[in-house]
Image (spheres, helix red, strand yellow):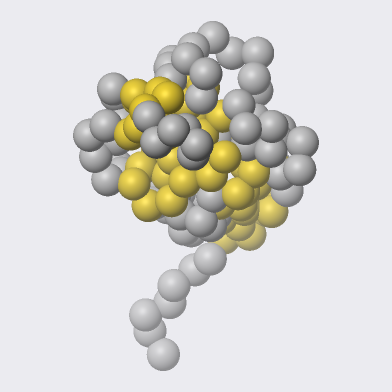
Length: 127
Protein backbone atom coordinates (compact mmCIF):
# COMPACT_ATOMS: atom_id res chain seq x y z
CA UNK A 1 0.00 0.00 0.00
CA UNK A 2 1.13 3.57 -0.63
CA UNK A 3 0.39 6.84 1.11
CA UNK A 4 0.84 10.19 -0.57
CA UNK A 5 0.68 13.71 0.86
CA UNK A 6 -0.51 16.55 -1.35
CA UNK A 7 0.03 20.30 -1.48
CA UNK A 8 -3.29 21.99 -0.63
CA UNK A 9 -2.70 24.89 -3.04
CA UNK A 10 -1.51 22.98 -6.10
CA UNK A 11 -2.98 19.51 -5.58
CA UNK A 12 0.40 17.98 -6.49
CA UNK A 13 1.99 15.08 -4.65
CA UNK A 14 4.53 16.30 -2.10
CA UNK A 15 5.67 13.00 -0.61
CA UNK A 16 5.19 9.36 -1.51
CA UNK A 17 5.48 6.80 1.28
CA UNK A 18 6.39 3.69 -0.71
CA UNK A 19 6.42 1.32 2.25
CA UNK A 20 3.19 1.52 4.14
CA UNK A 21 1.24 -1.06 6.18
CA UNK A 22 -1.71 -2.70 4.45
CA UNK A 23 -4.24 -2.40 7.28
CA UNK A 24 -4.34 0.85 9.25
CA UNK A 25 -6.55 1.25 12.33
CA UNK A 26 -5.69 4.88 13.10
CA UNK A 27 -3.17 7.63 12.28
CA UNK A 28 -1.87 10.70 14.13
CA UNK A 29 0.52 13.53 13.30
CA UNK A 30 3.03 14.73 15.89
CA UNK A 31 2.43 18.27 17.23
CA UNK A 32 5.40 19.63 15.24
CA UNK A 33 4.19 17.92 12.04
CA UNK A 34 7.47 16.00 11.69
CA UNK A 35 6.16 12.47 12.33
CA UNK A 36 3.18 10.31 11.38
CA UNK A 37 2.17 7.42 13.65
CA UNK A 38 0.09 4.57 12.20
CA UNK A 39 -1.63 1.88 14.23
CA UNK A 40 -1.18 -1.08 11.92
CA UNK A 41 -1.95 -4.78 11.74
CA UNK A 42 -0.55 -7.01 12.91
CA UNK A 43 0.17 -5.64 16.37
CA UNK A 44 2.42 -2.67 15.73
CA UNK A 45 2.66 1.09 15.52
CA UNK A 46 4.83 2.45 12.71
CA UNK A 47 6.20 5.98 13.05
CA UNK A 48 7.29 7.70 9.84
CA UNK A 49 9.43 10.79 9.31
CA UNK A 50 7.27 13.11 7.16
CA UNK A 51 10.22 14.86 5.45
CA UNK A 52 12.14 11.73 4.44
CA UNK A 53 9.15 9.28 4.33
CA UNK A 54 11.41 6.78 6.15
CA UNK A 55 10.03 4.53 8.85
CA UNK A 56 11.59 5.97 12.00
CA UNK A 57 10.59 3.20 14.37
CA UNK A 58 8.19 0.32 14.88
CA UNK A 59 6.65 -0.30 18.28
CA UNK A 60 5.33 -3.76 19.09
CA UNK A 61 1.87 -3.21 20.58
CA UNK A 62 -1.03 -5.65 20.60
CA UNK A 63 -4.17 -4.40 18.84
CA UNK A 64 -3.24 -0.69 18.70
CA UNK A 65 -6.07 1.80 18.20
CA UNK A 66 -6.93 5.45 18.84
CA UNK A 67 -3.55 7.18 18.47
CA UNK A 68 -2.81 10.64 19.82
CA UNK A 69 0.51 12.38 20.41
CA UNK A 70 1.11 14.22 23.68
CA UNK A 71 1.63 18.00 23.52
CA UNK A 72 5.41 17.88 23.13
CA UNK A 73 5.53 14.74 20.95
CA UNK A 74 7.45 12.62 23.46
CA UNK A 75 4.37 10.55 24.39
CA UNK A 76 2.08 8.52 22.14
CA UNK A 77 -1.28 7.57 23.65
CA UNK A 78 -3.32 4.62 22.40
CA UNK A 79 -6.16 2.41 23.61
CA UNK A 80 -3.83 0.51 25.98
CA UNK A 81 -2.02 3.43 27.59
CA UNK A 82 0.81 5.92 27.18
CA UNK A 83 4.07 5.09 25.37
CA UNK A 84 7.28 7.05 25.92
CA UNK A 85 9.01 7.74 22.59
CA UNK A 86 12.79 7.88 22.12
CA UNK A 87 13.64 10.08 19.14
CA UNK A 88 17.39 9.40 19.49
CA UNK A 89 17.03 5.88 18.05
CA UNK A 90 18.28 5.22 14.50
CA UNK A 91 15.81 4.85 11.62
CA UNK A 92 13.96 1.55 11.32
CA UNK A 93 14.35 0.69 15.01
CA UNK A 94 12.02 -2.07 16.18
CA UNK A 95 11.26 -2.27 19.86
CA UNK A 96 8.66 -3.10 22.46
CA UNK A 97 6.64 -0.14 23.69
CA UNK A 98 8.03 1.70 26.74
CA UNK A 99 4.82 2.13 28.75
CA UNK A 100 4.33 5.10 31.05
CA UNK A 101 1.88 5.20 33.95
CA UNK A 102 -1.04 2.79 34.15
CA UNK A 103 -1.57 0.51 31.15
CA UNK A 104 -3.11 -2.82 30.17
CA UNK A 105 -0.51 -5.33 29.00
CA UNK A 106 -0.55 -7.01 25.59
CA UNK A 107 -2.45 -10.12 26.71
CA UNK A 108 -5.00 -8.06 28.71
CA UNK A 109 -4.26 -10.02 31.89
CA UNK A 110 -2.27 -7.39 33.78
CA UNK A 111 -2.66 -3.78 34.72
CA UNK A 112 0.84 -2.34 34.76
CA UNK A 113 2.55 0.74 36.15
CA UNK A 114 5.47 1.99 34.02
CA UNK A 115 5.72 -1.45 32.41
CA UNK A 116 5.76 -3.42 35.69
CA UNK A 117 2.96 -5.81 36.56
CA UNK A 118 0.74 -4.41 39.27
CA UNK A 119 -2.68 -6.07 39.21
CA UNK A 120 -3.64 -9.37 37.62
CA UNK A 121 -7.09 -9.73 36.18
CA UNK A 122 -8.34 -13.22 36.99
CA UNK A 123 -11.20 -14.56 34.95
CA UNK A 124 -12.95 -17.07 37.16
CA UNK A 125 -15.33 -19.16 35.07
CA UNK A 126 -16.71 -20.95 38.13
CA UNK A 127 -19.60 -19.32 39.97
